[in-house]
Image (cartoon, rainbow, N blue to C red):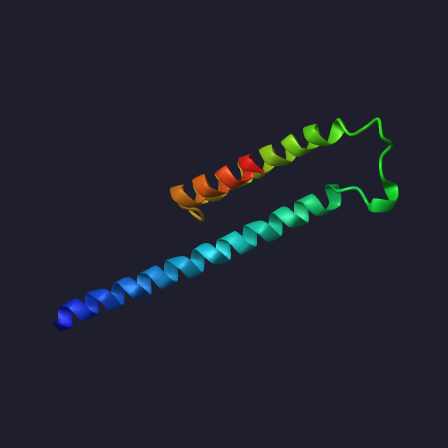
Length: 95
């Protein structure tokens, strides 16, 4: 019985640690993405004329490509697991 409790306790600690690390990585990524996207967004006072709405999708795609590159680098560095990488990539491509 003590061995079973020890195993359950160890599993709980590992799962809690993994959750904490995953959440911290997600918050850090969101902060980085927000910092990168912040300067790129035009100010409300400097709105573009009506003829230029076609330009933002190209910029949006460039932004997504850059974010995908960063996700790949984080995965290569071991910061993200394969599952975390796939989830973040799916969220990015769905937006």
